Image (cartoon, rainbow, N blue to C red; front, side):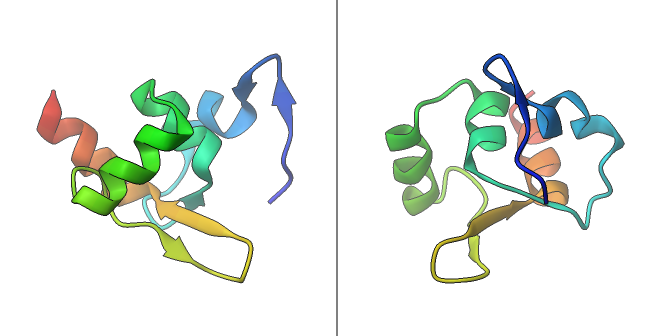
Length: 76
């Protein structure tokens, strides 16, 4: 996945609604979705208040789009 940004909003966030539920996004998108900092993202993930991240390599962690949507709808 290309990591492109325009200003401070990741392109993946701009196109979040068009992503399939099976897609994965990285931390900047999740932080923008919830309006939280990196520290809060990791704390809430650890506490189970956000969907669990998946580690796909030593340096890459992702969140599932379908799980994020379900979480956002549950809090709405």
